[in-house]
Structure formats: C-alpha cells, structure tokens
Length: 398
Image (cartoon, rainbow, N blue to C red; front, side, top):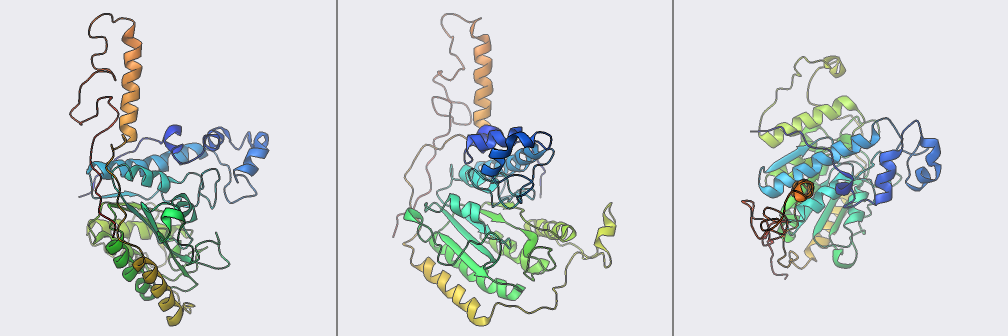
C-alpha cells in the first residue's frame, strides 16, 4: 500500500528554478565557522543569529534533502507512479526567492509546484499551518495556473500577511484564497470554513494536482500556535482533500511541540492509507516523550474560541463570493512538456560520457545514441532527447 523511496538531494540547478543563484551559492558556503566573513550577505538574505533563520552545521545539506524529497514526490506524481506522495520533512512555506524567513531557507513547495506544472494545467496549494503561506502565495500571486488556499491566524502574528482581500494580481486576480482567523479555532469551526470553500475551489478551478501543507502548529497545545485543533480535526482536512481523488503531494511544515508533531503526521499517514491506528502508542525508543497518557490522540484545551459565529460566516461568504466570481477553470495551450529533473540528469550524464569517448570515434555513426541522433527512446523523448510530447488538459474558459 505504501512504498518508501530514498530521494537524491536537490542540486543547485534544481533549487535555482525558483531561488536566485547568489542566494543558493551563499547557503552552500556559509557555516558557523566562517559566518563572520558573510556579514553583508547574511543581512541581505535574512540569515544569522539575529534572525529566525540561524546558520547551523549541515544547513545546506538539510535544504538539499528536504527539497529533493519534495521534487521527487512531484516527479512520481507526474509520471503516475503514485496517487499520493508524502514528504513530512518538506513544507517550508515562508522562504522567498532571495531570502530566508520563518525557519525556512529553500521553498520546496514552490519548486514542487513548478515541477507539477510541467504536466498539469492547474495546481491547487492548500496550507493548514497556523501561519500564512506567504512564500508560496507570493511566488504565484500573478498567475491563474496555481491557486493558493491558506487558513491561518491573522493579526499581530507572524508573518502578518494573508488578509482576506489579498486575492492575487494581474492574471492571478481571484486565485489567492485567504481565510484569516484568530485564536482558539476548534475542529467544528475549522471544518465550517474548509469544506465549503474546498468544494467551490474544486468546482471552479478543477486542479490536475494538489499540494497539501500540513503544518502541525495549528494543533492544540503548540508552543507557538494558538489554534485548538485535535488530531482528528486537523486530519479531516487531509481526508477531505484525499476524497477528491486528485494526485496529491502531502508535506509537513511548522510544529513546535515535537511529540504532537510526531503524533499528527503518523496519524495523517494512516489517513492517507485508509488504515486505522490504535490510540495506545506502542513502545519505542521515544516512548517517555508521550507521558503521561502514552496515547495518540490529543484532547483540546478548555479555552474560548475567539472566532465568533458572525466572523466565521463572514469569512465563508466572502471566500465563496470571491470564487464564484471566477469565470471557470483557466485554459492552457498545448505545449511540449519540459523534461523532469531526472531526465535532465540522465541527459547530462550521457553527454558527459559521449564527450569522453568522442576522441575515439570517427567517421559515420559518430552521433549514434547522442543528442543529435534522430531516435526516440521507450520513454517517448523528442528528437533532441529533452522531453516528452504530451497534451495539457485544458478547458475552455467560461
């Protein structure tokens, strides 16, 4: 039912599909031992001890690993190798093109969406972290091919973005969907917003793929969060998204009460698999972390929900009105599908091999099997070996 795949680390070229090259080079060079020599760059890129993005040993390798796993998940979805891909180490939604933010250095979500857009005409991004998914929204704010839907605490709270009237710009007007909420959100209140808005999004946008960021800091008892969701309430968003049977990339995100993060993502993995888990946590190396009850599920705190019936209804109505104003799913012209990064790596290796043996070749047949050879492989590569010809799904607007 579930396969495990170790993913290769993301390369600088892969990460530069969104991030600036000088930012990637900086992350690759800076370490705790040499950071004094990067004072100006640390200020420019919002990295260092006076920010929320410190430099630590293995920083660059860390970003490569979680980003590579998200990209690998997107590639497998594009190829039809799975219907759900999970990377709990990903979901770092605050990182910008040339700036770290909110413990996020590389925005693996944006990179994964860009990979999905090679095959899918439209991609839906859903964010149930307690913080607004500002980095992802900003990256796709002016396009109608990506819709972002974020439910988050809004007000005197990081990152301070995600007003309900922030709906996108230019071609992307109406495609940024923000549900600004306040402290104390309960399962029932959260569901009242999530499900009807999701229904309308799926009706009018008709995404070919979904990326779901499952930040666990919206759970009850989080050290930084202020919502009051149970595991079941949080996971209901996963279950409901899964019910639409659209290829989905499931990612992690925030979460600052570590034992509850582990509880949450273990339970949501079971939801993705349609497997029931017992409430009693089995003995393991970290068993003592789950004292005193040693149970999977959490009991919401006895606290007031500051989201009133009127405020929730106002958010729900405003978002449904925004979505109803969209004129059908945007269409996309047919185009040659760009190669995924695995094909690019294969081609680069083949080209390197070809160059290394070129001196030993002469006369007829020199280009046999090379990039200039007029052949197609079993994968259906185009003449120059760079990709596959495939039609995008497209609907007429209106």
